[in-house]
Image: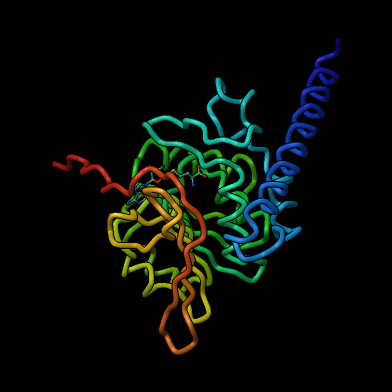
Length: 246
Ligand code: SAH
């Protein structure tokens, strides 16, 4: 078989796997309609999921599982969220080509790429230097030039690029991060997983949820309202390692 033919076959197979992933994600959206407060994900969100090659974001050994609807390890004890959660967070953030978006927790860069596929200008911060560097290199190589990467403490946001129309936090916070709320534009949306032990009220029929995904909406007058979306399981927010400078 010619080399090109082999690549083409593989690309076709991955496209088919990706289409199946999108179908399953759309189905799960219908199953969770009551929680998410809408019948289906925006078609554009599903198109963005179809446009991003998830297999190019996971470690080579995980590429065969890239289109399964589950989280995967990405090194340094971190994970890439399951596609349904990426879709749900993206959908709830209501992002379009006019949006400026902050992501806290770049990880492998997949969520940032999905936001960029919707046309948004994306600012993403990663605490761990190894992951930050790898993601920045990967996003640049794949042509995501609307994604701006930086290593540091994402809980502090990105003040110079603020305000943001949407903020996605992809690691669990103990309480609502104040700095991030301050950097949210009036009318903006923040999607953030919160530790339930921080006092977040979860519906009584959820047996001991450890984390809940929250949607925060900032009104034009600066006040904000909160809504619980889903029980979730994210890695916790951490402090970036101190680099020994001498
Ligand atoms: N959105 C990522 C997955 C995130 S996993 C993706 O699409 O691949 C959560 C990530 O948040 C991890 O990579 C972790 O290192 C990072 N993280 C944890 N605490 C952080 C902090 N304070 N600032 C920035 N990133 C943080």
